Image 1: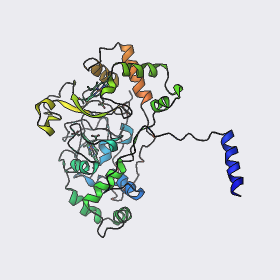
Image 2 (image 1 turned 60 degrees about the vertical axis):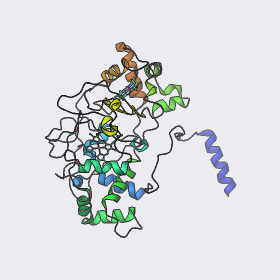
Image 3 (image 1 turned 120 degrees about the vertical axis):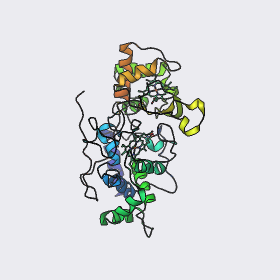
Length: 347
Ligand code: HEC
Ligand code: HEC
């Protein structure tokens, strides 16, 4: 019987190559802390918490407000708008509480040893407490949120399923563990560039291929290093400061004057989705961001408009992969409204 099945499989393989399984060899496995192994139950709880505005003081802001699906897991704003904001998530949202920086994309945040533009957090678990406590973002005491969650039966069973061997699992520590487990699923690792590198030369068209060659010739990869197209480096920013905003970059973490005005090298994966650009969101168009970066960087030079467009074609067509886009829940256990997804202004 077994032999027949095996033969049938061999025959099937010979005629039909079947679905292509993306080789994920060049990307390392997602680093996961021993104290917080990723499980399906935790990821599901994390996904609901991530979209639940119960976590904010005004009960209207969720993590997803500033890290939304249609905005490249960012928010389309130069600088984010937190509690008491007006309008749905995305461009057009405004309000009294504007953060001082552009919302980082969460694509591949799972791989980062340091988080934030200045690298001040060193794990997703630790990071998640920051927006909760930040009065301009969510403005709530995490333990107070945990007490609210413990009063919602659906959350209690979700926490029990995710942290099965704990007597009292509904804690702020487990809340951020679940959110971090969810964030570890937000991996973008199989874009047309990866297929190209795997030998499928048709994966990039002529323009995108020229853009890739230029990207290499200009040595963008010194900092935006493949395969992640980012690095744990803090480098000079060439973008103009926003008036009235004090931001000293990495210096705020290290106190080293050499780090003044330096920021972590962001990923260029899904950069076509994560506009506006740079730590303060001062540049709206990807082409302008590329032009700004090309000239002053070591190995770089001023680009002609055609060259700039080629690099943009490579970034857009070559580095976009959103296969792991998370599903936005229609309802969350608190019964509060999942923040509206906003809209894309026709561009
Ligand atoms: C009001 C908007 C806002 C909300 C709400 C918000 N964030 Fe953020 N997030 C930001 C901004 C802005 C940054 C960059 C801040 C900085 O670098 O100082 C950021 C950065 C991050 C980063 C760092 C990513 C990286 O690669 O460096 C992670 C992770 C993150 N947020 C997760 C979350 C989670 C989880 C929640 C919910 C608990 C959340 N955020 C809620 C705006 C927001
Ligand atoms: C010496 C390191 C370095 C080199 C080389 C470099 N970059 Fe950057 N890049 C950075 C840093 C740091 C930032 C963030 C600066 C900021 O936010 O102010 C950045 C930001 C960007 C952004 C904005 C991304 C976002 O999400 O905000 C783009 C696009 C970009 N670089 C493209 C390029 C291109 C194209 C090249 C080659 C022409 C290049 N970079 C070369 C360090 C570098």
